[in-house]
Amino acid sequence: MVIDANRICGQEKTNYGTSMAAGRLYIIATPIGNLEDITLRALRVLGEVDLVAAEDTRTTGRLLSHYDIKKPLTSYFEHNEQHKTPQLLDRLEQGLTLALVTDGGTPCISDPGYRLVAGAIERSIPVEALPGACAAVNALCVAGLPVHRFAFEGFLPPKTNRRRKTLEGLAGDDRTLIFYESPHRIGKSLEDMLAVLGDRRAVLAREQTKMHEEVIRGRLADIVRAVAGRTLKGEITIVIEGCRAHD
Image (tube, rainbow, N blue to C red; front, side):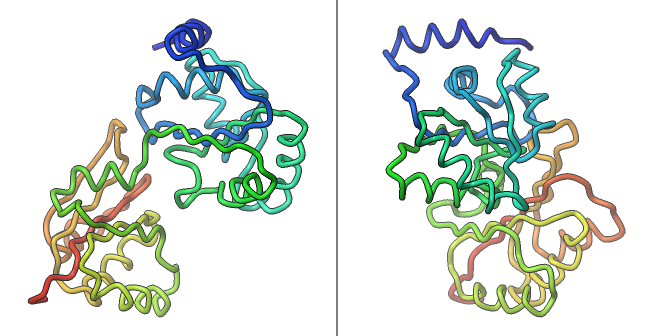
């Protein structure tokens, strides 16, 4: 599916009277899998900015190409974030309009972006966030667990001792807990969750919005058994019931 970004730009401006402001940082959520999960506003802004800072320029390049958007890209990821941030802030101060995107989902949520946003605020550079896809929220919505209060914990520490200590600190939290985890650590992390938190209701969501999307519901012991011996691929989100008074 190809959408004319220029047509969208014109329509958006006619309806809302918006215009691209110089020296502004745009935080843009992009699809976590299905390329249709992007807003018209995101497409408009991506088509208007001077530069797109991307966690992976190849991934973002495919997204822009899909929507026939041609914009210069620069890499901005975990290992160059510290030295790249001052360079981008300098250009923003000079009047550049910059869009920050990640491989998928909302920037700054377990992804690069915090330093750039904090630096922009410190220099009085306007920051505007364009809402959209977020794997944590998506998984929470399909989990069937309480959503009135929840805590996003991101990635747990990779080492067993630190991971268990972190989980111990969360064991008494009555909010629904949300974690990200990598495929090669998922088995051990689930075992530690079961050992520390007990056999709570939980959901594992994998490859959300993609062709091979999978959602496993049950108790932690059920999920541990369901993934045992399997080689899982893709991004994984785990949602776990909070502590109840009788737990």
